[in-house]
Image (cartoon, rainbow, N blue to C red; front, side, top):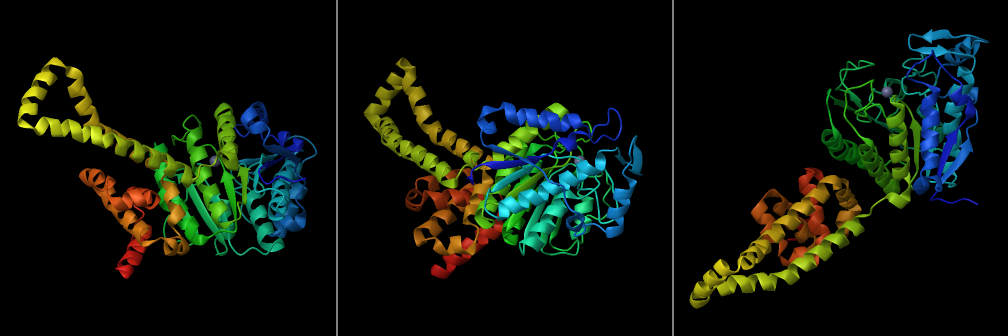
Length: 469
Ligand SMILES: [Zn+2]
């Protein structure tokens, strides 16, 4: 029996045997810690289906790598000891098998996901792959695992549009090189710059190649901003049929190999955003693969956070947020008459004198009045905060079809929400307006769109509104 709500996790015991040297940061302990963390957390362990990763065949590797490179790698595999394949890619007697299982995990994941056995897959494998190109090993990578999976999806399942998202702290140079001339593959890589592998060309790439360099010291806010303003809009426009993630966790603030300051929640954030796009365009298909991450403790915590975010159980829908906001809005409306009564009493000449007396004698009246005035401000602040962290929700309105479906009152509510976000007083004024009340979802979407500076969405909704007027 299959269950689309369960995440398949592919791994193999040989992936624990590959070692490049004693105390190397890319160590078997990384994988062991991740497995332990996933199995120890009851909120996720029951959702995982553990699978043995098969070996990739030479033909499957040859979709990505040169035949001569593959045979050289097989021939170089030592019987004992450690030999150097590239400066930072060394082989022990288990490396070849480990690398074949790491790439094979992708094949199995693609097969299961494409045949509808599961929607989400995570390949808990090593060595990593994203620095390996057609003809060279580099940066601890031998075969480009994600590329082997993506080409399998393209060729065995005849897909037309695949996305590869790489949030490892190092630029996914191997993956970029492999797909540079293949517009069927959307590639997005966020990375510390300047840093290994020292990418020199940041601009002037074909539209399906998207680079997001981050300077030393970049933190959660800037990273999430990149995700919201660059990754998600371009991914939505591409409409992928299946999404691959090169999931490296070395941009964590405690990782010794970089100077980027992300945390576990940031990995959940980007994962959820990607899953939303997958749910909308790719029938939920997400295949994620471990790349880097060298602080073993933080890697395990980040992987757990990432895998949990892949679980549809932990996704939040726009409807949930909107209904919570609507409840707050109604509470606010109920509090209005009391507030107005208090203000009216204070404007009557006799009552004004009286209220002055009461205010002096009874400080809680003053407190009440101030609270009544501050309540909407506080509510608005909370609402803005919520939308700051969940801005990607507004992309629920992004396709032409969504916009076509908006009614006149929803269009107007969106316009008011958008205007409201631009000034604080407008926030308050428009908060009580009829369209905002009648079409809260569109109203909040307008606020969120404006705050995430989603000008494309705003202009498309406005164009429709203008046409209707
Ligand atoms: Zn890395």
